[in-house]
Structures are given as C-alpha cells and as structure tokens.
Length: 180
Ligand SMILES: [Fe+2]
Image 1: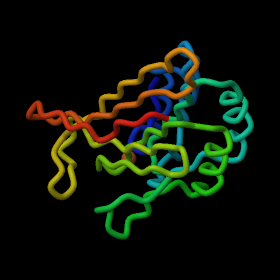
Image 2: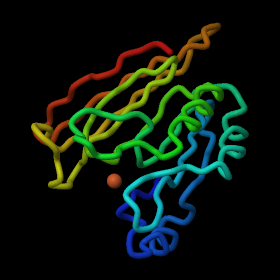
Image 3: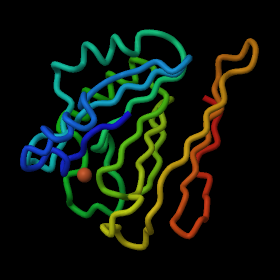
Image 4: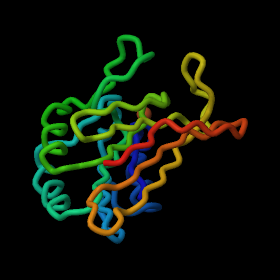
C-alpha cells in the first residue's frame, strides 16, 4: 500500500501518482489485519489533512475485528526536533478520536523524517525516518521501520507487535515489543 506525501502532490504530481500507483487512498484486509491508507496531502501545501468526507468510510473499513493499521504521510501527534514547524494534521484531534474509537492498533506516518514512537491510549503511533533522502534532521541517520506482527494464539485476542529501526549501517534497534 502506498500513500502520497506533500512532495508527491506538489506541482500537480498527484496526477502522476495516480497514473503509477492508482488510488491515493485505499484499504485492504490481509487475513485478520486491516490496513487503511489515506492521502493526507493537499496540493502545494505542506500541511496535511484527512477531511470529514473521509471519516465515514474509514470508520466502516475498521468496523470488523482483528489488527487495525492506519497509514498516512503526515503526523497525528507532534514529534521532537521539529522546531516550530506545524507537523500535525489540521484535523488531528478529530482523526485521533475516530481512530481511537475504531480500535486502531497501529498508526504509521513519516513526514518529518524523524523516527519516533508514541503510545496513546491503546494505539501506537510510529513515525518513520527516511530511507534514502539526505534530508535528515539533527543526529538521526537514514533508517526505515521493520514491523513484525504475530497473530494471537488460541483463545487470546492479543497480538505481538515488534517494531525495529533498521539503519543504513545495518544496525537494527528494537523500539517496540508489545502485546496489544
Ligand atoms: Fe513530507
């Protein structure tokens, strides 16, 4: 699943994104895992938004059981080392409430290229660094997130989630190891 970022939508780039990757927002069920990916970009604006017009189908997509993942480019919660930059969705509060109410387990985002993890209620919000861009911030180096998810065993309904940061020098750092 691929979602566009603000740079993909700049200069009407979203038209090429649609040609190459098709839908800018989509969802899928992969066994008991539901993944919803949203285009949070707005052409030629840095700030992100989801928009009320999308809340209904997001809620519907997450109406079942199982493990629920929400993926978007922009941030839902501010992260450190972003200075005074506006780094959350303009409708972050409403989206957070929607995801929390829908029982979302994991949110994936990445706009600022800063790897970070927040836990909010029962939801993990995991920001990715950048794999290949030279636009890193502070002392962070290039990295990506590797996510491992083990399905519940027998009667249990709890999933085992592990998230690793993998760095360009090959180092692998475990940043999440949770039963959720
Ligand atoms: Fe971005």
